[in-house]
Image (cartoon, rainbow, N blue to C red; front, side, top):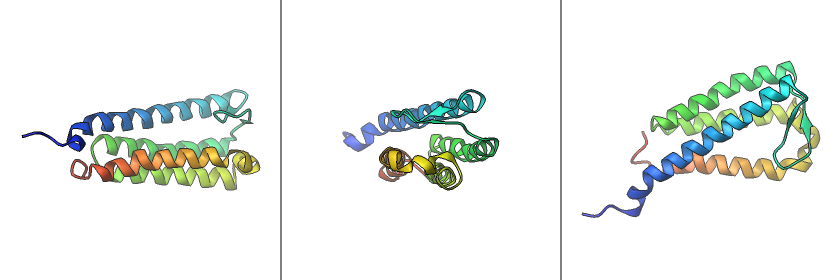
Length: 136
């Protein structure tokens, strides 16, 4: 009996999802922490430089625990991981827009933010939903 394309593609899609989420998270973590201790961090594709404050870093690190936990749950095939990941991303985005430095340049980077959030939804919510028979 042959497997369906959806069933055959699960491992490939699953690992691409995890690699993309982990790679982006490591990049963001590195840029933010090095920006805090250095001259600031940049937004990919823009010449904007932000210098996180101590409060920004504390909020970032707390919410990053939710992002890491979400990726861990996704690794363990739990749908809730996608929700942890997205909620943490959204909460940090809200913080960065309202109290952080992003609010001052939002008009310049809103398309980038929408793009990143769309990719995050596809990777962390849509893929576990599509393969719901594999995820708990």
